[in-house]
Amino acid sequence: MKLLKDKIVKDGKVLSNQVLKVDSFLNHQIDPPLMQAVGEEFATRFKDAGITKILTIESSGIAPSMMAGLILGVPVIFARKRKSLTLVDHLYTASVHSFTKNETNDISVSKDFITAQDTVLLIDDFLANGQAVLGLLDIIEQAGAKLAGVGIVIEKGFQPGGALIRERGIRVESLANIASLENGQVTFIEEETS
Ligand code: 5GP
Image (cartoon, rainbow, N blue to C red; front, top):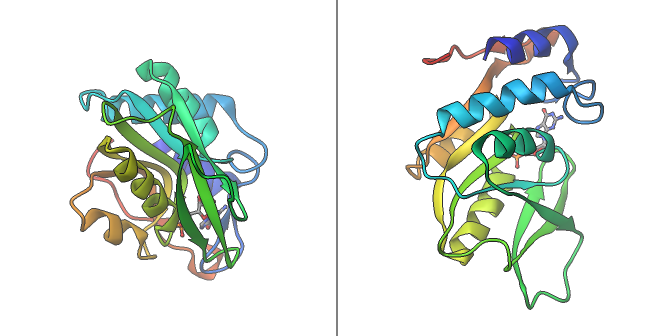
C-alpha cells in the first residue's frame, strides 16, 4: 500500500535493525486519514470473506480495526492485556510473550462477544515474531469461530511471525512488508497486489 509505505519512509524512525518506531501516526499520535485508507484496504481485501467480527489487541490495533469495521459494517473487539488473570470464568484467555518488551501478558476476550457463529478477521499493527497473532488465534479456536484471515498494518518480513502463521494455511495480508531495517534504512518486500 503506497500511501502507508511513503508514510513509513517519511515519518518512521528506525531504532535498531529490529525495531521501527511509528509513534507519530500509529502507536501514539494517530493519523485518521491514513487509518481510514488502511481500513479501506483491509475491507477491500477481505470483502468476500463473510466477516462478522474484527478481533484485535489493545491498544495500537484498535485504530486500524475501527476503520475496517466501519467500512465492513461489523463490530470490533479488542483483547485486553493483563499481567495475570484470576477471574477467568466468562473469558477466553491466552498467553502472549512480547520479545520487544520481554514480558508475558495474558490477553482476554469476553465470551459474550465471539461465538461459534462468527467469522473473524484478526487485525494488528505489527507482525514480528507472531506471538500476538498466535494468542488471538488461540482465542478464536476456543470460541469455535471461523477465521477469515489476518490483516497486518506493518509486517517485518525478516522476522519469523509471517512464516509461522502462513505455514498453518492462514491468509495473511500485510499492507507494508519490511525486508530490512539495516543501516537505518527501511526497505520493503514488494507486494503482488496494490
Ligand atoms: P509479535 O507478537 O508479532 O512479536 O509482535 C507484535 C507486537 O509487538 C505488535 O503488536 C507491536 O505492538 C509490537 N512490535 C513488534 N515489533 C515492533 C516494531 O518494530 N515497532 C513497534 N512500534 N512495535 C513492534
